[in-house]
Image (cartoon, rainbow, N blue to C red; front, top):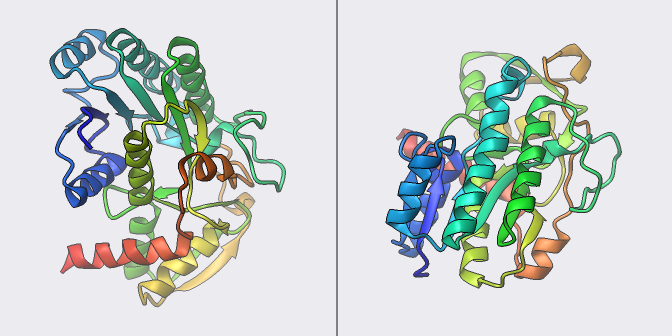
Length: 289
């Protein structure tokens, strides 16, 4: 792969996962930008970066993802998730770059037990989901050459996420209660990173919205149980309804996404979520040695 790629939010969880795949594959033509040098809210900074680097592809991992905090921080959340996405789309349009933008299953209400495809009605039930959907719409209006990749329950050996939180709590406590009536699919960020680079390498130009998560279905309780089982962590785990653990932001009850489109168009084989969790836990244990 020789395409020049810019990764915004390059030091976050997904950015670091992309970096790992690039190192493994010997891909050197990628620049990872942090939130200062790649500030998506500053058009002047963006213009300088695009002029200097002349990218062919841009991956936007930058986002406001603190779901509960967003309920009280709507302005900043909207600026990052909507205006920031629009700023990148404008630059990509001006400098003839293709944008791969990361979105979320939270654009859906998740009130029905059915696999969600790309054409299903998006009706977010919290500020985070609404601003991410607004960002999707901005990109679609500004830029033809775009991919919107919706994903869910992202975790990895990098940054803060549910897996690392559970491992920390499991080492500190004898028992934990985890929500059992919110269902989705855990997604290993390294798998998503590989899929993004595969899309770029394929260069099919099959623009539009796609869903990507690992295969399978789990509740947060199932996810936690697998984390403890696979890491040999002894902790008593209790399933509880979401009503017993109220949060400021509402979550979709069922947000399992249909991946048929991305699998057919890009001939992807997507790993089962528990198989990828094994790989992640192994990586975390290796890092802690």
